[in-house]
Length: 342
Ligand code: PHE
Ligand code: FE
Image (cartoon, rainbow, N blue to C red; front, side):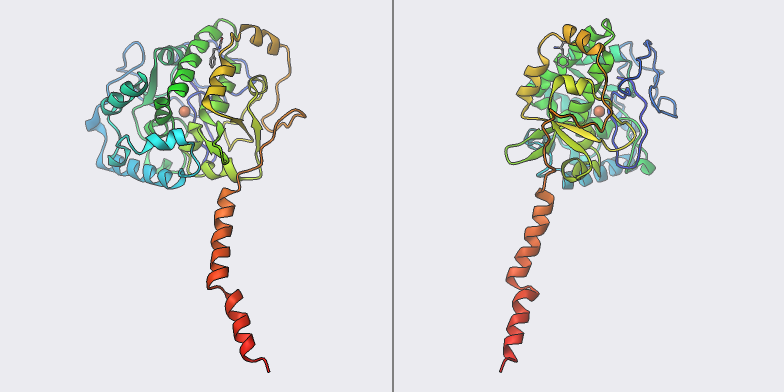
């Protein structure tokens, strides 16, 4: 999808960035939506008709590979215990520690796992091109890497966001099928003037979704997973709402593209996501077209609200407690005092 992104340091890009509630521009030429103040980035001159390009590995400099390694290293320190197990099981098996991945090498593994492929693209894509790729089990990955001054925040999706955030979950069979269903749904929705609803669904699942992982909340949204600061914010900050996934509610909820999310939606597992989005959306689009939309920070009476994850705090707390009980001042001081007791 096309989209202009802008935001604060730490916010992370999604591929689709259509401000919920705004009318969709009808265009199949590259364009940006929303609050973007810059033009499309990337070289669209030499692409094929389906917007794909060759990855020319020789164009990446040593500095690029070094920057990739630092981006990868930073996120890998953050995701254990925070990303969903489906992600964690795969992310360190893809050779990402060696530098910017080769599309061919990732594709060998991905094809064996779920029959998906990644295809190199210059950057953001028109909706119908994006949907066609997903429907064909091809995930478009931006070829270029962010610049050094964008290390903490990048306006649009780059090769790191796409490979790190999106690709590992394409190895999960159920999530992989959801992504293809989404692409087909997008192709259908174009004729129904319903792209804004689908964009919200993508945003609140593929980019910023949370999932219950037995013991607590985890992340599966790529926009969170590739962000150095939203990873812990999304799970533990008391500021945003975390609401049980409800398809109609999601489709009616606008979103912020220029800050951390104010609301996250929580699924039980990818099976739930796939099942609840499987029915024909045509009547649903008609139903919600006449209804109001909700601001990104709304809380509704029927929302199922999840508490922030306390695991970060608990770890810190039990470390403090362990120190206190073993060798801390609480044991030493009374002992010393006893010495001076008559
Ligand atoms: N079931 C949706 C439809 O009929 C397609 C879809 C599936 C859309 C999964 C999004 C995600 O349009
Ligand atoms: Fe994305």
